[in-house]
Amino acid sequence: MSAFAPPSADAYGKSLKGLGFSLIVRDLADSVQFATGVLGASIYFQTDKFAALKLLDADLMLHHDDTYRSNPLHGFLNENAGRGIGVELRCYGVDPDQVEARARNLGYTVLAGSLDKPHGLRECIILDSDGFAWVPSTHLNNL
Image (cartoon, rainbow, N blue to C red; front, side, top):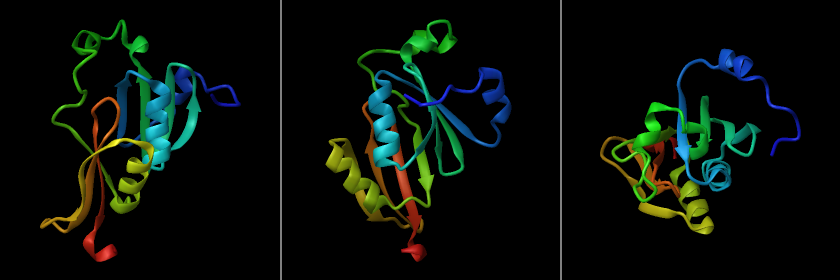
């Protein structure tokens, strides 16, 4: 939990720009651990049901399932299904070898280890506890 009071929802909403991601998660603490400990995100603020983080230049919002009870997406949530099937959350400029090592160390699923790809990127695929596929990558000429 943050040591300071989070901004009002209105103030936070007005601060957002560019591209952002909002993920509905089963276990907020685990999702925050994955985002910070594996991907290197930083926490802007956190409550017991919501966390706002910065990942590269993007805003990442994690909402616990409970916060979506009145949202139209709530009916699609399935306790047993992976979330985000078919979506890759790509993090360009993030060293895949370092992310893979941190993911393995913290017990997350490495779906595909770090490899040089024909499209000029070195990347890996890591699954978080909700089944979201995160793909950190670096341009091959940057290694």
